[in-house]
Length: 408
Image (cartoon, rainbow, N blue to C red; front, side, top):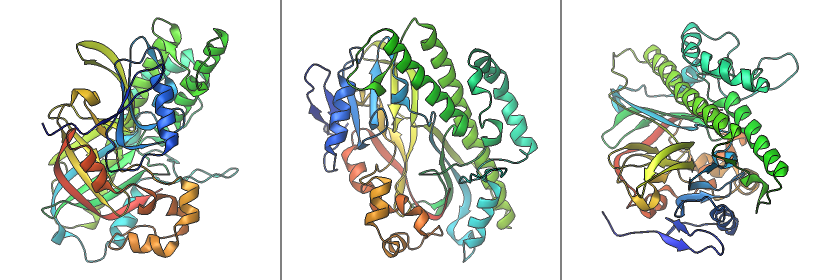
């Protein structure tokens, strides 16, 4: 293993924060937010901050929070199970058409994306009439969802079946990429959609109510937690596990539909999943670290146990990486989930011009309008610096560069 690259933020009255942030900017707000989490009495050993760390809702994006005896729903967030999937095809760059507009259009037609709201109108980001393959996939989740709804009826009328196999908005995307050997990959980023958001929001509020009921004062209301052994703890773990399964299936269904769309555009027969990775980066799971069984909450972080494959995407105009974990125990076997924002969405819209966005996405078939400036490359940290800061967490297996990018 290479030399250790983390720095330590000592937190008065709390656990230390180990930060893999050398050479990348970290805002003061993120340090303050990390320190609040590190002061929670059930944090195990230390909090780990990844190089893409930035302020988030509830907890810092790019943080790994190991706990014993409690879980913090807002540290998982509302995009439960959000993550990445990538699949290498047998196609080469020269197999693609000279213009990629048709491929982008075919992907946009194959996968509902974005969001539209209006009285009596169907949201364009959902299925009006889910196709049979989506209905069959939903059947694998329906019984467990029924158990959740029986205990928490508010979760029934949510976008569940109609959001399975759909992309969403914000930083979610579908890309066609070329690797270092000019091989074609499909890569996509999404999570548990409307139903996951509803589950996250509902349990975050439930945890806050519990804290008020038990007169527990917190450094931040968003750090409300469920102690192990309570009904709400068990119900949240069950619900979050289901949402994580929905998210992984959501990505698989999108991948199947994108590959089918590609086959309609490219006459040459090709194999689709010669190498495939499907990983969460907003989730909680039980793992063993430093000889003890703990709950590990990764918010904007990917599992990087030794030999485990993961995906670290850049922005819409930058490189992305398929990585292999080095199993660094100090990071609780984790790495970053992307480049990480350096500007808020509002700031990006104010500070980045459309001409800059167009220049920074040159060579990529993608949206080049005012509506995606909040996702422009300048809004993110340089991905090369992020990768350098975590050289002791992962090794790069493939370097990808997108040629098509679909945004919601």
